[in-house]
Image 1 (cartoon, helix red, strand yellow):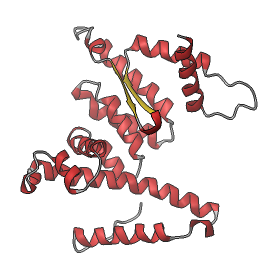
Image 2 (cartoon, rainbow, N blue to C red; image 1 turned 180 degrees about the vertical axis):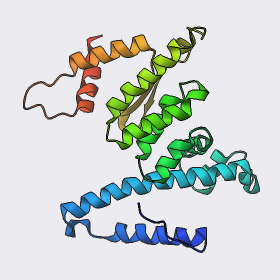
Image 3 (tube, one colour; image 1 turned 30 degrees about the horizontal axis):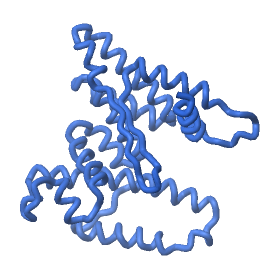
Image 4 (spheres, rainbow, N blue to C red; image 1 turned 90 degrees about the vertical axis):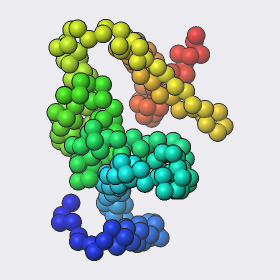
Length: 243
């Protein structure tokens, strides 16, 4: 990432950020070659990760000092919605990162250094949140190192699953019904009837779902250009229709 530039104040740094992004937004990308496109796209992901870490740090301090009360807001989330005019979902996401600045400091440090994308950092936090508190920091480091080493999300998910199973096997007195009680699936319908599906599955349910998606989501032939995610979507639709 190179040596960080020195600014006289946070406001000066923000002015430079806005100026840089404004320049890029106004640039005619069609006049640049593929190599320039690739460099910019990679840099955008780094900038997004760094911005997430910066926002989390500032929002955590803002929340701890109850700065939102100065504007008669009852929480940081409410303040974000009314003062920055973002959606409730975006405000929830921002406040979640602010909390992680205290529970997942290594993930925030990796984001601040532009070492992992924001989406990967968020997923690592979701995985290690299921581990005992005294194992999260070490597990975060383990998964971050693997991500920085080039492992994809599927490999990281497998590693996280191993960490989870290992922690469970070493705590035999843990409530065996805890995972069952934490189960849940949420389906949100958007404009035009499209939907967003989120779930927290038990090991048994995840295994069954995986088997069904693998069975129905196989490639239909050499000409099948669908991505794995698209094939899984179509497999889910087929499974639901068959019921």
